[in-house]
Amino acid sequence: MSALTIYPENNSQTVLQQTEDAEAITQALADVGVRFERWDASASLTAETSPDDILAAYRTQIEALQEAEGYVTVDTISLASDNPMKDELRQKFLSEHTHSEDEVRFFVRGEGMFYLHLEDKVYKVHCCKDDLISVPANAKHWFDMGPNPDFTAIRLFNNPDGWVANYTGDEIAEVFPKFDG
Image 1 (cartoon, rainbow, N blue to C red):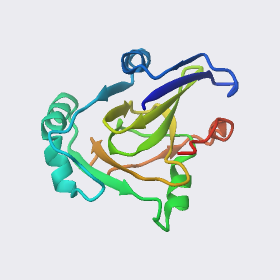
Image 2: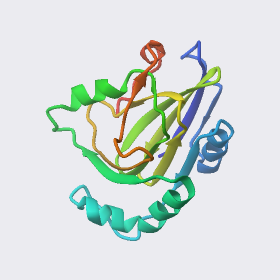
Image 3: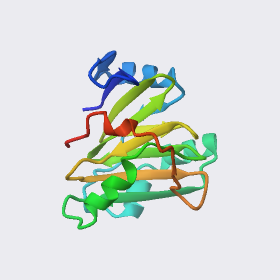
């Protein structure tokens, strides 16, 4: 289930707000410029569903988002717990970073945790099947897929080069609880 936990940036033990209510999550994130939505597929999807079939199942929502936000590249990414590179891939996203464009992810299946370091707070967003999150360009954040990742996500980009991180060098991600999914 989707969830949001908000902490002060200087204390990972103090919870300022915690909710699993989709409307409350959407509103709290909108207040800091982050898009959060729930989408429904037009077809039943599994881990074996092809990327083309996944994109076809969400074609209407993808095209609306592309038109509204100007995203030019759309693809899918899947990661399974038996991937021999899973630990290396997890580490790549665990350090705080920014992007020069929005980071848009829609979870077709599975789950992951986005941590957004905005203003003087950290927003821990548990994203799962049917969740879309759009982290604004230049927003400090990190992502944890957990020690046994098992997810498929649709990614949308403004830049055809795709995912390019600018690491902040801040060690804040080290003091917040990791995703054990």
